[in-house]
Image (cartoon, rainbow, N blue to C red; front, side, top):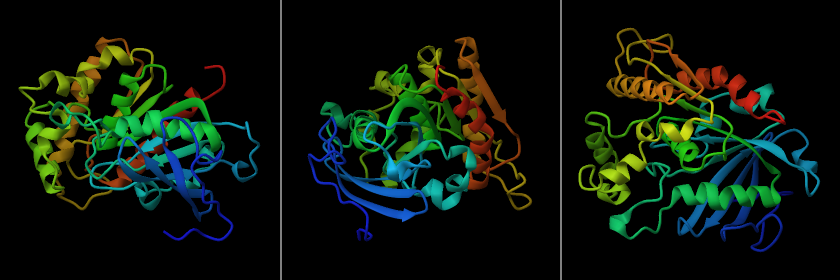
Length: 311
């Protein structure tokens, strides 16, 4: 990766490169207006990973102790850390000019989890990387504050609810767009197996077998974690898989239809648990970027309200 003139390459142990958890920034590159890419060496992953920052106004001239609220924005399966800026208008939204938007690599099929690896643990440990390594690193030298919200699409929608449930109080609000929010639903375990195999992964290494290791699956299934979301406002959205305003006539998307069923099931659980829930089950719509851009826009008022000081 080329580092542009005038950008910093952080060394391990420096203020920009140091932090907790042993992760360090080994390269930094300005890639656009307010966009900075970091290459992070992660013990939890056993390799480097990329993170894109959409920086707030004044970030380049920040003082040592200056902090901004954080939106952690997660990509979906089969995509990369730059998906949100590649496919949506997130980088130009005026509402986000006072927020540090953090878009980390999550692996094409990492599922925002610390992998079970047949009981051995170890890498990849995506949850540890994002929450125990990356966030403290960004707080140490990149202006990240402690007021945080989280949002994500598809696989990232799962990560959004998992991270919020696993770490109560870490995020002030969570938004999931077409999220895989109930991976034990129906035949989705078989779908997940096929996805992992397509990337050359051992499907049992993620959470084990859905029968033999059901407790591990349930610990990674928001349907079973709704009680841990009681104190956090949640936004859920999905389409029904039929042709919507951004699709050609006659389009049908079986995956979005199944995700829609999942989201309705989880919404019922969240309501029963007394969670402050907002839903946008918008009917016609498929599993595509135009819908996720629209849902980001629709959920931003809730997310930004949660970031206000004193809330």
